[in-house]
Amino acid sequence: MNPYAAPEAELPAPPAPPAASATGALHVMIALSLLVVSWSLAVGLSSILLGALGFVGAVVVAVLGLIKSTGALGASAFLGLRLGVKGTCLALFGLVGNGLLLLRGAGLTLLATFGFSRGRQLRRFGRVMLPRLEQDGRWTAVRLSPEISAPERAGVAAQWRENGRTEHASVAAFARLTLDLMGLGAPPALIAASNRDALDEIRHTELCYSLARSLDGQAVSPAAFPEAARAKTLPKNRTLALATLAVDSLVDGALHEGVSARVIAKLAKRCEDPAIRAVLKEIAADEGRHAAHGWDVVEWCLAEGGAPVASALEGALRTLPGEVHGDLPRDAEDGSWERFGIHGRALEAAELAKTRADLVARVRAMIQGTRAAA
Ligand SMILES: [Fe+2]
Ligand SMILES: [Fe+2]
Image (cartoon, rainbow, N blue to C red; front, side, top):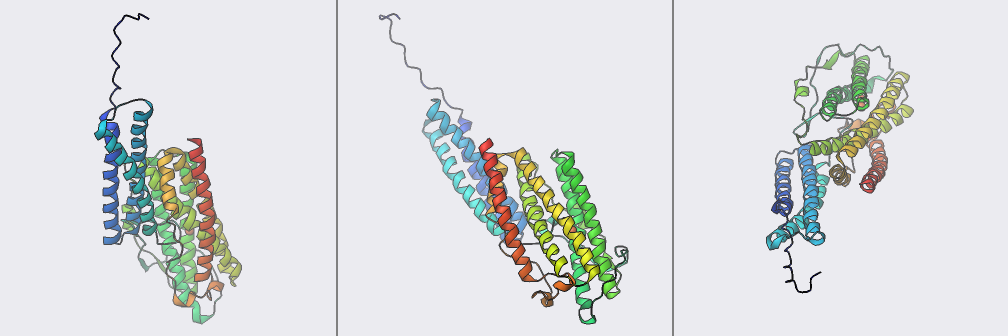
């Protein structure tokens, strides 16, 4: 080293790319807009699911913004990249803003998903779609011979037809799931399971309408169901699509089908009629498998999408319904129709509480595993 040489001028730290700090702030604006729009939809249109999906989207955008802002500040602190006063302010705004929006999005999802329906449902703009009924015997071909005393026969038949409407819509819901899985490049095992589940739902629909006919003699079936072709599709962005599918499968698959399986298995034990008991046993076994397939979809989405999907699931976890809002005939509410295979309020609430508790523990473990592996 030459002691007489002029000292080298200290080189200034290289400037950080301006986009790095601005992107976090941009995410705040997008997430905020999503929250406002979703809130308007949830409240203005009473569209619970659409609002929930918007809130989940806001959570995912906020997580991505948090990552960008943290990256920009980290580059400034540890790599000596210059952010400048404006860049530092933008990055800090991004960090704090996205953090707050993450919490807010999760909180709003809580309100938005506070509805409950049994089994995998078909929705458009958040509204559950069910078929109309018509006089026709094409879904009533299974031969069943239940023996129920006259006073309850008409009411029990009507409720089995109502169950059949949700089973019929579930056929289309699984068809929609198959298309979504294919669009995201899911493995064949998930696509095969979705197709088999759709066939199960066709059988459940036939069982419900056949049982109703054997009780009151009416040949009634689901009418044409054009709404099935207009069910909601996933967002175009892959991360958002995985997060949406994960939350849908958690709520409609793991939770609702899990509750259905438990409720119907209990009903099979309480039912006094052998013909109805056999129907309940068959449906309970199938619904248990459908719930397990719902978990498979959640796990795959998490493995594919990583941290943003984990955050969406975490937000959804805080929002799971704590009570049941399903419609029941007044005479069935106290459980007195459980001997005919129609549940009461107490049974549904008890099984929802158990399924929900198991689900929360399992999802938390999955999220921890994902974060530990990252
Ligand atoms: Fe079913
Ligand atoms: Fe099902």
